[in-house]
Image (tube, rainbow, N blue to C red; front, side, top):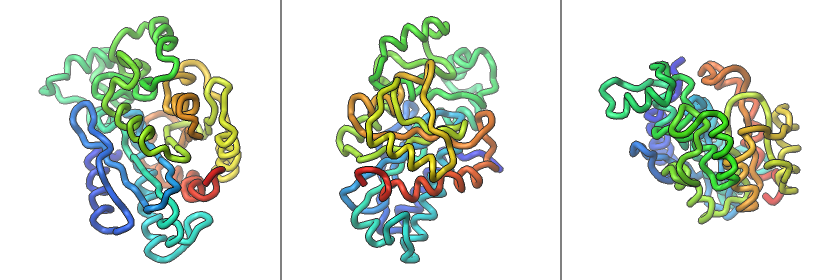
Length: 300
C-alpha cells in the first residue's frame, strides 16, 4: 500500500466538507512551501477538543489514523449510533472535535516522494539530509525545522543541546528553528490554541505504543487522569519523556504555558516510517481513545 500524501488528505477533507452538514473544513494555516493545512471540525458544541497528526514527515501514517476516525464518526452520526458515551445527535450538539490530520505537509511530501533535482531547494535539503538522496526518514518541515521542537518551551536550553549534537542549522530532525514559532505550521496551531482554548489535546506520533502526559516531571491533574483512561482504552503504557524529547514540544508548551491537558500518543511499533499496512491495526488500537476522549476525559 502506498503511503498517505498531502494530496490524499486534501481530497478526503474536501469530500467531508461537501458530504456532511455537521462537518466544517477550513485551513488553519499554510506550510512553509504554501501547502494548506486543513482542519476538520466535527460537531458544533462548546466542549472542544483537538486532535493533531503528522508533526513529523516520516509519521504521515498518523494522518491516515485521523482520517479513519473521521470516516467512522461520520458514519456513526448518520446511522444515529453512539460515539463513546454520547448518542450521535447529542455528540454533535455538545461537542466539537477539531482535527488537524497533517500539520507538516511539506515534511510528509519530502519523506514520501523525496526531492526532485529540479527543486530550487534540492541542494539545500540534500545537505540537511547528510548528503543522502534517501529522504524517507525526514522528520522536519520544508525548511529543515523540527516542528515538535519549535514551541516556546525551554527554547534557549535546547539550543545548547543542539550544539552538543552538532546541529547548527536546518536538519533532517532535531533542529528547533531560529526562534519559537518561527515556522508557519507551528505559528498556525499556536494561534488556534490561544484563540479557541480546547479542553483537551491529543497529538499522534509514531512509534512505541506509549502515552506521554507530563513535561519534565510536571503534569496537570487532568492530564494524568486522562492518561490513566487512555492506558486502559489502548493498552499503551504511560511513560515519561527523556533527553531531547523533553523540551520544545507541543505537549510541553500547552502543559506549562497554556495549562491545557495534552496527551502524546506514540502509535504502533517498528521503525519510522511505519508501513501503511499497519494503519488498520494501529487504528484498532487507538480507536477507543479517539472515540471516548471527547466524553470520558476529565472536564469533558
